[in-house]
Image (cartoon, rainbow, N blue to C red):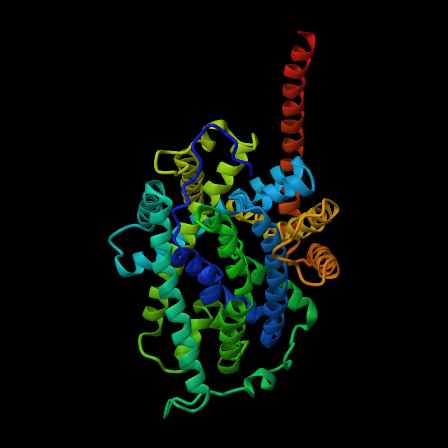
Length: 467
């Protein structure tokens, strides 16, 4: 985003430790602690393949995004790069789809946090907790980006400590270090009915959508780094560390879970993978421990959802693709109108969760189901085209995608193939079709907006020529 406006720009107030911790814990959400139980139940031990595929995809996509972001740090991130590499309609479409994804995350995370708090304090209704949590985190986002960074730093640190402790405890248990509380061990991967891949490779691809939803958020660091003092350095550090983050937090922890808990354990999709693993290890107060960790993870995700949605809306506004008021910045460098507008939609979504029929709200959620894959597809196509432009102009590329263009094309083919398989899968057809329908509507709106801008630009040009 070229910030040539006379208006005040965002403040580079995020400290290196904020960006570092954001990059480390950006992939750790409630999807890992709870949602992974559904993925394991669906795919069996072969869920490890789904996480490995999704993780490899994310690593490659982050490398591509890193190449573009180091060359041109931008709070609009991939939406801005899509506009430059593909066309205005692409930047408009993927920017609004991404904003929609995160404003729908707000009620999901608010309700998840409220449900935990309600189980501790039943006197307060769930919806009251949900609105109070959303309001509190909105206030922190309104003060300054440094306040968001500080909240997220501590949220992230607690998540990292929890997951490292779980991995250490799980490894200790598998090694037989818990006397009288032996767990099955590595044989669990093969000994259950159906073996390693009980439902075939189709189930692994089906689980890919769940795992991709869990990984969504890795790219936030390229948005946040634009508000730091040395964005190129922060982005390259974060991108280089994504491999070990995914390997440690997801592959190692899920490997420990499927080694200890039968994939067809009926409690697994109900209580979540971490809680069930702690129960198998006979750890006292397993539910309370996981509830506390999930509450922190959910609050972190909600905090990031508010931040990310507001920055994408701000970037769209600065490019003329969103209401002008959402592109204004306060004296301390915060796009308050963008924060409040995103929060307002989040509040309405939270209320809709309680008032709308379940089928209607379910359809709204389905519209964001494949947004992650669409975002990654757009990043790959943008990088492919922008890299050719840079090379054509002879510009130096400081941070490069590996094996270009072969790995970029491999990512594009894989994503298109995965979306096609999911379209023909009964379990995921609704999500693919709902997201596709929403994307077509946004593309149509984007084309109309683009024509209006083109017409508006032609009028002044004609006026100048007539003088």
